[in-house]
Length: 87
Image (cartoon, rainbow, N blue to C red):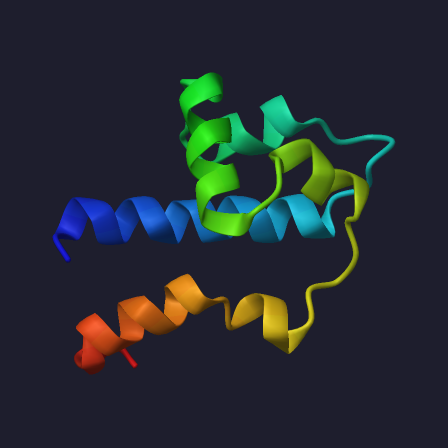
């Protein structure tokens, strides 16, 4: 995995964590996503759904504190497998 891919996945996971922790009534997907450096919202949404299996707005609607299982998402395990020095 190249460094750009790694950093993009890291930002995606940080954005997901922020969506999970946000209050649905006061936060917006646009605000959370742009705060994490994603400016092409349509592309972000497609990549997010491919990675997490739901849209960013679905994540925001289900926002609660993430469980250890959510934090240890398979894509993070894949990163750890490809880059054992980070594990």
